[in-house]
Image (spheres, rainbow, N blue to C red):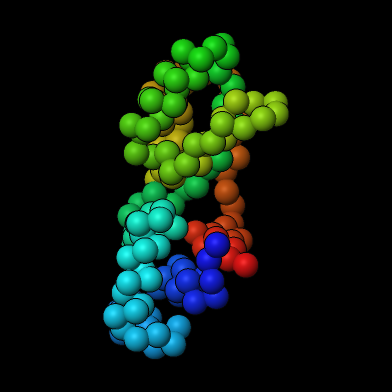
Length: 151
């Protein structure tokens, strides 16, 4: 179980992963040495998995965000494994989730524009044992966060 201070450390790091240890310690009312030790323990115990930079997709020319429902041609362990392995190698795919329901996977991807998406779909995604897809192009990102709720 996490105590209040560890939870506060996690909340602060989610808001600013580049915060200095001295500033983090001040925000959570610990000495810098005690704070550094807590962060180390949070890493070791798996609460903190890593740090990343949030990049601007428009400036990197990948402004079209799409969600794709994927139905595989067969639902055997071999087909699932082949799809999972292949999707790991596709840089446009940001997330891929096996889901319960009317389709097998939900894929989140970013590409330049609709023409790039058509090429991505035809040359990349449909080559992986996929029977059908349904695409949802995002018109507006209402909320986009990586912050997890910490209670």
